[in-house]
Structures are given as C-alpha cells and as structure tokens.
Image (cartoon, rainbow, N blue to C red; front, top):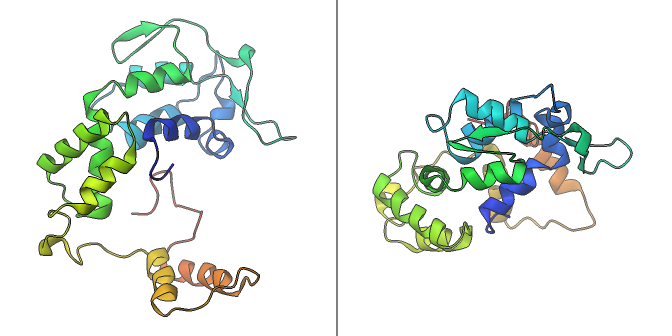
Length: 221
C-alpha cells in the first residue's frame, strides 16, 4: 500500500491482526467498547487533533466492535454477536454504522486529505510544511480517489522538492543510515546469507531505534 490507495490501507490496518491485538481491538465488543484504536485512527492515522470530539471517539469505538483474532489461525474474524448494532452519531452523521462506515465518513472530511499530505511533506521535504503546497497535494489526492502515487509523483518531480533550502534538511534515522551505508558501500547482500541483515538489526538499536518495536503507537520521534 505504500504507493497505493490510502483509504484501502486504512481499511486493511483497521482489521489487521497485529493492530487488533496492539490497540485492543480484540477487547472491543458490544457493551464494553475499547476506545484505543478509534482514538489513534482519528488522532494519528487520518485527520488529526481538532477535527473530532470525544463523543466521536466513543461512537467510532462502538462501530469498530466485533473483530477478534483466534489464536488457532491468527486471522481477523468478525463475530456478529460481538458487534454493536445500535444507532451511532459520528462527525454529524447518524445511523447503524460499522467500521467501513466510520472510515467512509472520515474520508468525506476535507481535512483528511490535508492531514495525509502534510505527513508526506514532512517526510519527504521539510518538517515545517508549506500549507499552500499541502493544499495542492490534497486536491490531487482527493481527485485521484485517495491514490498516493499521483501525489508522490507531483511532489517528487516538483521544483519545490529540489529547492536548495530543502536539501540536507532531514535527520536520517538509524535504519536509513545503516541501510544507506550498505548501499553506498555496495556491500553484497546474498539472499542465502543472513549476515548483513543480522548486522543491521544488531546495530540499529545501538543508535536508538529498535526495529519493529516503536516506543508507542506514534512511532519514533
């Protein structure tokens, strides 16, 4: 999904077994909603603080009920008896919405595209985004039905991206630095040998980034 459809990515993440376990979706059931994933879905993944309320989180959590991960298969499983079929009001819309319905409503909000494109700008260009550029990218994202490739193509080919003011403006992460060194030094990585990957995994924690074990759901600062 890295250059694919962002809305499809959010749908997949929502019922991914690792996410259901990590953010307590497996404990989220009718009569006992767990708000962890609903909160992060809004705050970190799609729209950002200031564009939803605590009531929205509560009703999103209810809509997201029903999913579990059986230990025998480790595949996501929807159990109807665990789902809250009651009427919910979320971001001004009322009905018996489920997980897909919640995601549809989030992606109807104008700020969602800006939030996503602001993240892309910070990752690829500079920590302080140009809101004018963000607005342009957001329009491209919406007009392409949430496909990321057209947005990235415009951004990475733009004169703005190649502006000298943006060169060397990003702090390289331990993973990028270590893998980058292997590539720059043209160190062979034989498919049959674990030596180089093992070395990388051993060195990255020494620089403060334990791969696949972020300190919290927001990731590494």
